[in-house]
Image (tube, rainbow, N blue to C red; front, side, top):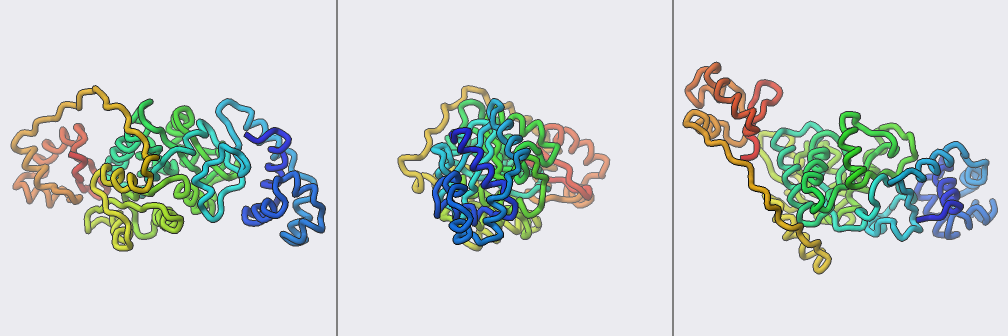
Length: 374
C-alpha cells in the first residue's frame, strides 16, 4: 500500500478541480510519482497540462477532503489503491483509462483473481433474476470472482448468487458509481454490507460523491476491465449493460449473452449482442469452457463439491402440470392462460397460488404470469 506521505500527494492530485484522469495520467507519465509533480514547478507542469491546470494543481490543496479520505482509509477493511501500488488490479492496466485511485472496502486481493462480470436490467424479470443468481453461484463455485455494479435487478441477483456459493466460492466485487461511503440504491444497503464483509466494494469517485448519471458509464468501464469476460443476462436496447459489453469487447474481453423470448423487450439487447458476435450461452458451463482457453493454466480450480442434498421437488398434480405446460416460457396474461387450460379464472388462481409460493411461477405487472426456473 502507498505510504501516508505519498498518499497525501496522490489524494491532492486526484482532488485538484478541473484536472481529469487523462491529465492526471499525463502528469504521472511525465514526472513519475505525484510528489515529483508538485516539486517540478509551474513552468514544467504548464508544459504538460497548460497554465490553468497548473495553477489549479499548485493552489492550496483541499485539506478537508484529503483528511476525510485519510481518516476513512484508517478504518478496518478500508484501502486506497494507487496506480503505483502492487495491489492495484493488474487487469485494469489493460484498459485505456485506468483510474488513478481506487477506494476499496473489503478484501483487495479479490481484484487480482480471475473474474467474470454479470450485468443486466435493473427492472429484471423473475426469470432473469433467477438466471443471474444461478449462473453467479455456479461460476463463483468454479473459482471466478463475480463482478457487478450493485444496481437493482440483475446486478443484485449476481452478487447474491456469488455470496450463496459461501466460503468455498471466489467471492464478489461490487463496483459503484458513487463515493464508496454512499450506497445506491438504498435498498441494497444490507447487500452492500455483506459484500464488504465477504468480498469487496470498489469506487474511483471521491468520498461523498452522489449518484450522478454521467458517473455510471465510467463505473461500467471498471466492471468490464476487472473481468476476463462479461455476461449480459437481460437488457433492453438502451441498457447501460450494452455499454459494459462494448467496453469489454474493445478491451479484448469475452462477451456472453443469454437469449430470451422474442416478445420480451428485455431480451432485445442480448439478441443484438449475439448478432454482433457475443457468445450465446445456455448454461454456466458454456462460460467456463469459453474462458478455459483464454486463461489456460490460470483457470481457477473449482470449489469442492457440496454434500448438501438438493431441495426436494414438489410433485405436481394433473391440473398444476397442465397449467405449467400451458404457461410455456413466455409471460402470459391470466385470461389467455385460463383459455388455454379451459379453466375459470377463479379455478386458475387456486392452482397458481401454490405454484407461486413454491417459486415455480411469478406474477408480473399487468396481471401476467411467468414460469420461473424449473
